[in-house]
Image (tube, rainbow over all chains, first blue to last red; front, side, top):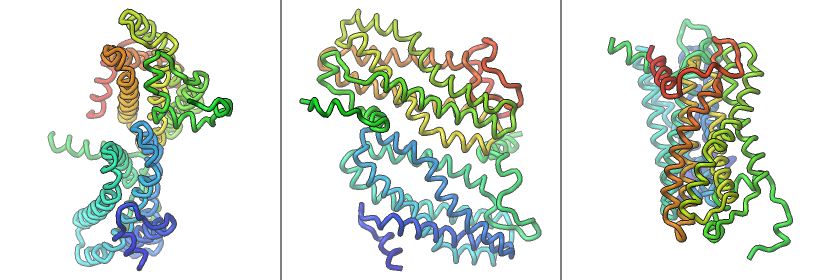
Length: 210
Length: 236
């Protein structure tokens, strides 16, 4: 609990140790994943989702790290890369911890709302809230860096664009997080690698206009 | 003053790449004197390696979508991305050299070439760093048009950052001749147009899995028409 408190209240640039931050973030994500998957009543689905939410946090950051390094280097911010990476780690940990803290609300929503579309909407909102909390954390840790050199703001925005762009597609690939009663339990949907989230949204808009 | 003994110790390849990306070679004094102390062979090797990495990432689409000759596509793209940069430089460099000489800019022919290689390496570094993102989308997206546009977007981002690096060099050299920046700006536009059309000629880089593998496609149409067709296909 002290570690959680330390992470959330951390002053700029005083992030907890990498291992602690990683454990907290992944633990929180697993908690939320477990709760989402448990809705189906299938223990295996809960286990799958408890693996997939932390996987989402890890992979989305991992895929974007090379471009983050290059962006920092070309902006002349390479000397600040270590504190910038610590800020990212703190933000990812905050994302996981917030997801964990929102788990009771997710369970409550699962038990009281039965419309699948409404449930998806609630899940989306909870993830959005957690992302907002992570951004707060990122902004806090970036404050001294931006004060030192405003170009950090460019690096931060660049990171956000690539991270969100990749994260949305990754979340789409890793579906289902919330199991549906009556449907077979599966780690990934058969069409997981056959759809693009952005094209699906584009298709929906195109259908609306037709 | 540099320590001569330190110069004799060759720096590691990642260190060279890191220094290029950080712009450590764009020393004001050297630029004003028209000399750039950059290891050209290293720039070339690193450029080919980074281009090959991104090329392989492009070629993964054919592999993930079950197209024929996926390995050959990856090999072809790994060869074609560095070739695209080299050929574009070959086409555009002579005109840039003539104009820099006419304007009596301080950068000599060799220094100018080194500077452009440096900017190319930054461009290649950016797209190679976005390679994992491209490979992930290639694995999870069946739409060829989407992947083509993503590739174009990544190339454009890399190009903008590479040009920003050139402008930075121009700013450093500005103390002696103010036209450098303007000239390099115009050259960036020419380079982008030639590079885009060169990419069109060297296509396919991504490789449509519905079409049999080919090292090169017929030289019909142009990049602008191709781009419009691709955007249109996204909405069909």
